[in-house]
Image 1 (tube, rainbow, N blue to C red):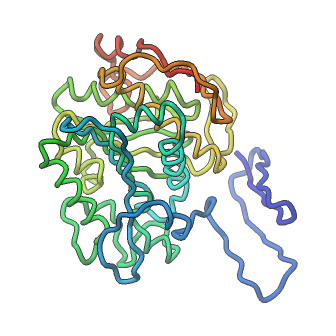
Image 2: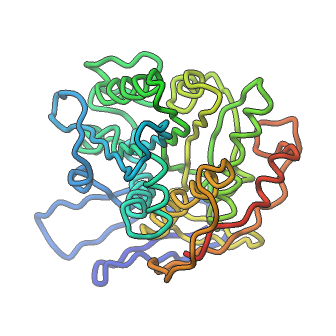
Image 3: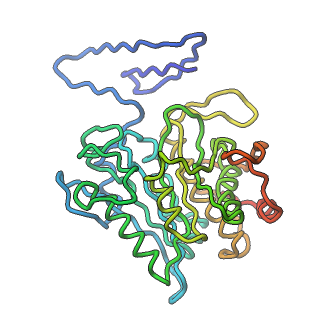
Length: 357
């Protein structure tokens, strides 16, 4: 367990290990008067930080804070079917780590990195960095301006009470009904207050082939990101989650689509083979986002959309991401990602890894 202490002189947060302590009583002392002091649960990421990201907007709103969308693509073959990856974040305004993960995805995809260029040439990425801007503006932890948990209203969002959700759903349905578009991924990014590492929630399907196929992406991500835990990833259809984006869209879209909730810990991650907790930083969250983006190249190589390895190029990122062997998983019979993969899935995971970062 760690106690986090921040010193104003150098603006650095220190993680101090403690043992045999069950309760903490925070205290604060300031050397200034008549100034506002804010206490935050995690690194803040405000609505203003997202305003310059993207040009598209959805829905008139009571406080005039509009959700935005960023569309990334380049050099797609004319007339070819568009493969779309749709990513959303910050539907729960207090889950600020989701914004840093999303920022890492965006930064990588718009970069000059050769992997990013290949992805833009083959896939359309649509990203909504902040689904609940009013909640963020007001400092809410989970709900919107009207007091709703937006991630429980995907089935029937109101254009007045849930305008951003309504707009996103309409856009996704339009793409679903377009024969020239194949919406292959929906990923909703969240932060988790009790679990460690990054991990995913997926859906359970009666079709065994579809169930096995949706396990491929988190397995690939586990190989690319040291802080992502496949053993914590689970697939479920809990009734309480029925109104979430992952559950609703998993039932709406066709069997070639994969819908996930990507969770990341508010606090720390544990490296495989160790018991040491590494505190998350803003850079670590963004690094996870970059690894999510990179993993799409692995996935689309397996599906033959992208052919052959990239030529080695100088590294343009300060982090070099090695490949990590995912730990042994639990056996079948539960909702965790421990089901024994079929031979085809095992063969997929033996494909060549990503090129030099």
